[in-house]
Amino acid sequence: MLPDDEQTPERDHRREAEHAGRASDALALAREAFGLAPERIAVTSRLAELQIKAGDAKRAMKTLERGWAVAPHPDLAELYLRASGESDPLKRVGIVRRLATGNPDDIESHLALAKASLDAGLWGEARRQLETAGGTSPPVRICRLMAEVPANRARVSRRAPVHLIDGQTRPQFVGVGECSFVLDEKFGNLESGALQGLH
Image (tube, rainbow, N blue to C red):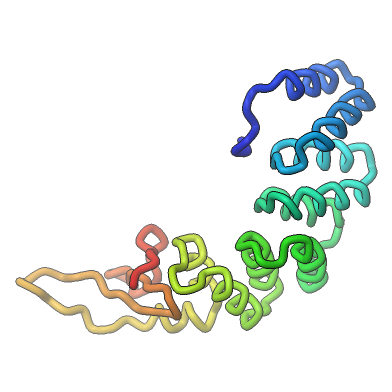
């Protein structure tokens, strides 16, 4: 469930209209809700979904662009790509870039571009976006994505000798930019459950 999708009379009315098969009524109510609160992620998503369902993908993209400008969220980026109908990874980068221009300095814009770049194999661009988003104290989700850049993964996967302290094996940390990664003791690879932003 989206973070701001709490119970409201407006949302209940929209749902009732949809369940009754009144697609046009549901769309009108969703459009009204969006006009009142475009910053609400759930409201933006619902209107865009209904517009896509109604075959109006271009209008859905416009809705998502407006929503992104005031409240970026990963779900909006996914819907935007879905509405575009584009499957080519390189072209999808350009589509995400168009969405991101509505809020270019927000961390979600950089993350959306980084994810699209990773999917397209644009490793340098992905890393650049992640470094910009993370700054000097990158959160865990940025470090996780940073580890997906092949050049970084190769570096993290080179296992350093494990030091023994008091006869016990200690986890090894390898730094990539501002991120540090815990090496899996058995395989010497990135351990997904142990990735941390450490300084």
